[in-house]
Amino acid sequence: MARNLTRTIDIGNLKIGSDTAIVIQSMCATPTRDIDATVGQVVQLHHAGAGIIRIAVDNNRDAVALKEIRQQTDACLSVDLQENYRVAVNVAPWVDKIRYNPGHLHHHERRKTWQQKVRFLVDVARDHDCALRVGINCGSVDPRLLEQQPQQDTPAAMLQSALEHCSFLDDIGFERYVVSLKDSDPYRVITANQHFAAARPDVPLHLGVTEAGMPPDGITKTRIAFEPLLGAGIGDTIRVSLTLPFEKKCNEIEAGRMILDDIAAGRMLNPVLNPMRLNIISCPSCSRVENEAFIELASDVKSLAGYARDQAITIAVMGCRVNGPGETNSADIGLWCGPKKVNLKRGEVDVGAFSYNEILPQVRIELDRLIAKKR
Ligand code: SF4
Image 1 (spheres, rainbow, N blue to C red):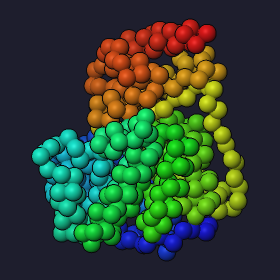
Image 2: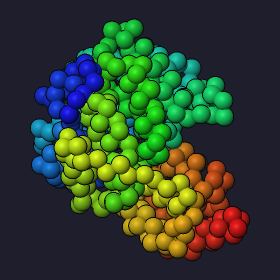
Image 3: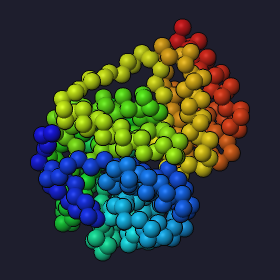
Image 4: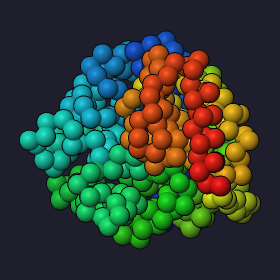
């Protein structure tokens, strides 16, 4: 497969960049503090062929668990940070790569600039021989950049955020990083990554369609983005983000391998998304899921909404309170899951919180209301 000439960086014993094969990666969905379950999932993903396995760490208790996890596997590990960026110092000794989200560097320690926070992360990465990923996500774009865009153009703000972080990292002499620009809309993933690759052809890219949802639709959405990008030489590592039961997480790796093999063999399926049909977005789950019933709920919502398949309606089902509220904003109907309640939204408006037993009839009411409004 022809590749853009990106620089090749070391991530543990692995390399990412155009000098080496495209790496397939995945993420653990188990609670990080459940060491046995997380080691089990790391091993499962590693055996399935995941080159890098990401684990979410939100606090120092997770960091303590990570130390134990590290001692039980030699897989290449990456850590996913959220707002609490300073926890990096406690996790870096146990991982090979740290992913930070520029949009999350604005909530804690507001008196500090994002540049000071990135400098801190770079110092930590240097001290512990880690690479970084600048992970931009459509649901949590830097609010300062979003406000500057006419009509809050998210892909443009995502691109700007990625470019300014690359410039800053270059200025302070840190080149061991990859970038990702993820959106739940595969066409926006194509646009953002094409523009980024044109502006920074040297920087390795991690490709993904976030919250692609359940298979087979989630695989189709991912293909829509990956075929033109990888086919044009854009992309050095990939993740297929699918909503799956924990024990089937390795299906993400199989889907990634199938897509790569097909593209390499010229078997392009050129799928398209019909904007006039129902679109269900759901997150791939990670350790932040507080109730595993989320996965079954996503599947139940899909079944329930079958009668609306010919409606141009988007329903988002998210697994946690960390990213759920933001990443349901652009959907017509949004659900984000807490430990006991599911929060229901109509666009950006909160409708209420309902138990897992009560939520489906409420979704039906919202769906009927939307369909009636469209008539
Ligand atoms: S929405 Fe929450 S549970 Fe789902 S993948 Fe994102 S952070 Fe994890």
